Length: 161
Image 1 (cartoon, rainbow, N blue to C red):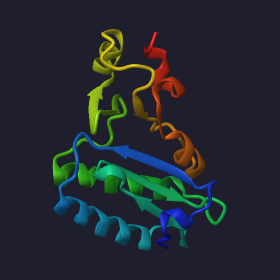
Image 2 (image 1 turned 135 degrees about the vertical axis):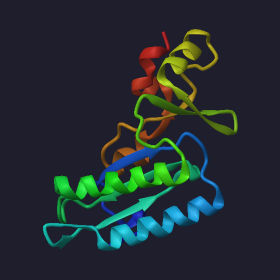
Image 3 (image 1 turned 90 degrees about the vertical axis):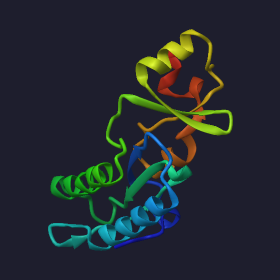
């Protein structure tokens, strides 16, 4: 059951998938349609899940589930992962590699392998004030308050020494 992301409770469980590039308008439209259809049919053991999504910056896919209504099962989580993997194949993008970092670089969103991000920190190309995307947040409340933060306020801070 598709619920507007903003209408889901703060305790909703989220999954964040970052893309290695910005989605085109056509891709964004296809992704939105596919996510709506998927969430409308998404359930666990015959019970619909109350879920929603958003696609910030046309670069991230954020899926949220109201676990107080019904927690997703392993099979339902697997189904969502298969959907994301389908996007990877269809659009020739990377969404599932967690060893990459997204951060703001001026007006742009940069996407770098973790080793390159570490080197940039060492070279002082980025700083503790650099806005990073903390994709380790797990609830909607954390997403709203701790997803887009200065590196000093995230796990990224360990590289800012």
